[in-house]
Image 1 (cartoon, rainbow, N blue to C red):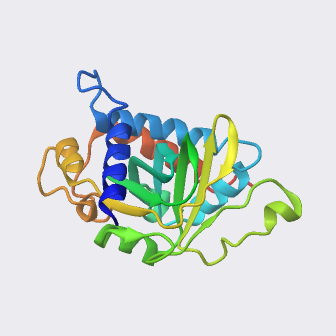
Image 2 (spheres, rainbow, N blue to C red):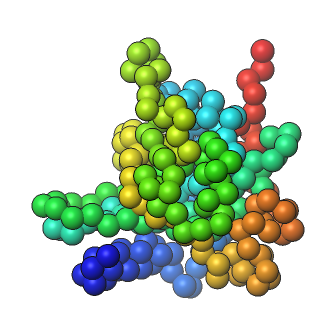
Length: 233
């Protein structure tokens, strides 16, 4: 990545983090969790995607929710945002969240900006393990596809079959698709340490080992269990 691209990406990520003032009543982490709850509820209730989102969440190994994915461009473009990663265990029980960031840079003649709510539904054990173990690139280390939407042929035909990750994005009330090819996902250690008040709070210890908890994150776990529950016959 060139120095110019690196500077752009750094500025973009700084802008996304600046959405929360240091003088806030809620911690940055708790604000992300609370906004992620809204994103999950919104996507699982939208008529054009709710059936697909709920179906994939029932089959998922995990989910990465980014309540504000910021995309900006002027010749050199990029997108980035911070969100919460959760893993699903037995009995449809979801883990406490770990904090991650996702970003990408692009080149070409382009201009404009956009903020979207995005969820990445992690469908495979490989997908979850890779994100936990490393800084991963979507489309390189892991396969990612835009999830289907709507009904009929358009809704049932998708390249998502066999993908490690299925993505959905919405912005300004519209379904955007959610392509994240080339994006890099990386853990935010300092945010995890601060939220769980322990420097051993690694993503694996939080998500898989269940060694840490924070009662303020109970609501997002309950919401995830609700939207991923099997429908009543």
